[in-house]
Image (cartoon, rainbow, N blue to C red):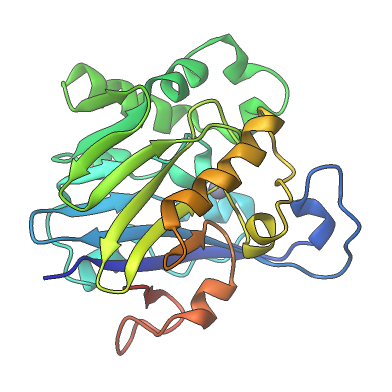
Length: 255
Ligand SMILES: [Zn+2]
């Protein structure tokens, strides 16, 4: 069985193009944002990349909710999640951690350290993380379920994790070998196709040079035949077929 990859869209919001590029690159007009988690199934394991935010959070933010990510994953036949990979710890990637209680959680050490450190409560950082989600991670850690990474790592055969940083201190991306070639799930190393294709960093930058380096790393990991899948681009829902009847608008199959 070749690896299967699904993008699950759980929320969305209206936005303007200038919000999505560092120092507001000259661009105008509507540029809505989609919110995803990704499900990867191989012969050996079921892997979830990120967990999205909850329905309650969505209501608090006044954003539409298209379905709880874990429920959509279950509709896709996910059953038990063996591995949860966290690309980074912004709130739109970390809800529901407590609900994936059996999974091993794979996270970069420098990401954990940053959000458990003194800057989490400073300025805009406080709005970018969710203390309840961080607390769920602390619980998972004390329960011995966290795998702390410091750099690139193997996950299961055909699936590897790669530290890129840039957007946050320990942002990581996932590379999956499939029948159609390598697929690189960039998450927020490239929010939109346009960030990666134009080498134009997103507006939220922790370390700008590493954001540029991350684009080159994505290209390297995908290779000439591979695909780079951005983390927040509504176009993903158009470029790939629906994952099945009843899942239109909520899940597409990438491989
Ligand atoms: Zn995000």
